[in-house]
Image 1 (cartoon, protein in one colour):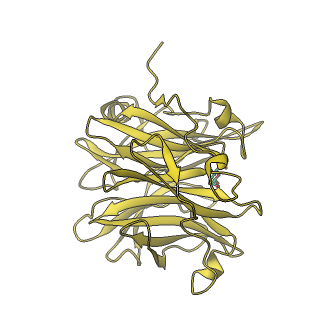
Image 2 (cartoon, protein in one colour):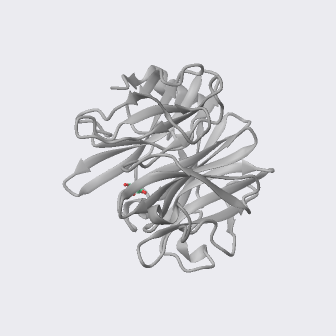
Length: 311
Ligand code: BMA
């Protein structure tokens, strides 16, 4: 049998609602980054009213996480963010740019879903910066480096003529974004034919920026969420060098096929290691957190050697 692309950790799931010291129904779609030699996880959790908050857990080894006693970010109840976070905060991504941890998350309200940006230096004090998109937008990941003097992000606008595709945008100040270009689209009658969306913030490799994304296929039994891989040019990230034709992970374990939403693996974070591996984190069935390990070189090879065009 061929080696799996992502080797699942035997101790999965690594975090479940039962581990959290305050009432939550789910622990999923978490960002994970390195901070001062530890792994910090910012996870999404549903409360019993069906709305989400963000929690935080820490780990020495990237596998065993201890949750903090209190939530990390609750929907704002006053100020300019309150109106747009009324229905909750979801699916965080964390990128370290020039020593600062930047958090993008979905802000849900009666006006739709849009992206908010917050920053932290220490994961104790968190400061909201700006709402950085209109509705309807989810799944925004920042690149960890600037290109010239501009920040870059992968985003996911939606329109009937170009449904749920991945675009790139640039900003001089993290607040105002533009110069947008389409970079990848779902492919008809393919595992990611319905929707694709940015997953983990891109990872620098020698051969390009590796982007782990999610793709959705509609079945008679509902949507199936899987993970895929794409490689972007190091200097010009709007240029896609290759997209792996197949998925790299699909729901298999019981906590991935059954849960809050069945048949979902969804990533918001991956941590590259010095030994050439990457720890990939994903939510299982929108209820628990899981982790697996893959070789960065193999993921890059899959994009370049067993690829398909980006659209
Ligand atoms: C998407 C988002 C994700 C979720 C996925 C599967 O639209 O809501 O947070 O993991 O659906 O339910």
